[in-house]
Image 1 (spheres, rainbow over the protein chains, first blue to last red):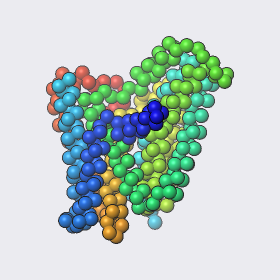
Image 2 (cartoon, rainbow over the protein chains, first blue to last red):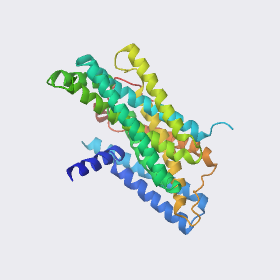
Image 3 (cartoon, chains in turn red, green):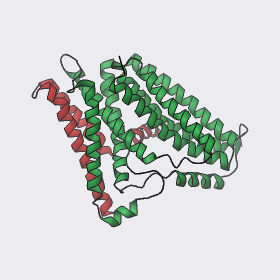
Image 4 (cartoon, each protein chain N blue to C red):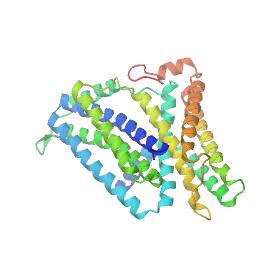
Length: 73
Length: 274
């Protein structure tokens, strides 16, 4: 069990690193894009641009949070 | 028919990522070789390389055999995007002075110091410390290259059947070039603009990850067809330009942080800032 935990922890650190909010935000953005594409609430052609826009906001928010944390430290 | 934007980007991304990681692995192996034992360091590095090659082949075959092509693009694209944004975020923080620049000379000195302090244990006729550190260094740095080669190779496979071969070739060429230069100069390759290269790799990984992961969302629709970006594969260029401009805007904005904190976080030695 300890080895399994260490193995999973290694891959989490490898892919997600110390910015879990980016990974979570990307997954949420893609999930929202899936819903938009399936329900056709917006034109199919607009879905990539909308999802990309949300991902940009996620990255911007992460950087803003990191900058505030470092300035306060 | 000439190479697509995806193929060119694939080769450039794997070449640059491999160059960055091989430089870092070379520093570790060089420190072990110069301080402890060249034989143990080279065997450790070579062993790691063999394991990495086997992992690449096995994982590549397993994923293409057992995972459906349509789902593969979404899954691999998502992993690539998250991984790429991690690189891009760090590059932005380095460029804005909120994170220390990577310093190859400092890393070399730290590795040498650790090697001098460690005891002398011999196993299988090898300086065990030098072997283990070299193996781990090459394996961990190489794993990032393997990850990029596999994700790029698989995700680009829909447009370019030989994408995995191109990705592996890009990585291998960079590794050969770095090792050749390293063997000639026989010192840490601190003049390689690593921080700039990491920034470029972060942009490429994020751009291709954005393109493929969103395109792959089509697997959940009724038709199962990939979503289409305006301009199709040329949208990658627009996405790359978009991420580049946004990252420069983020750097400019973050540089406005209080000067005292910015100066305290920045190291100005090693590599060049974009």
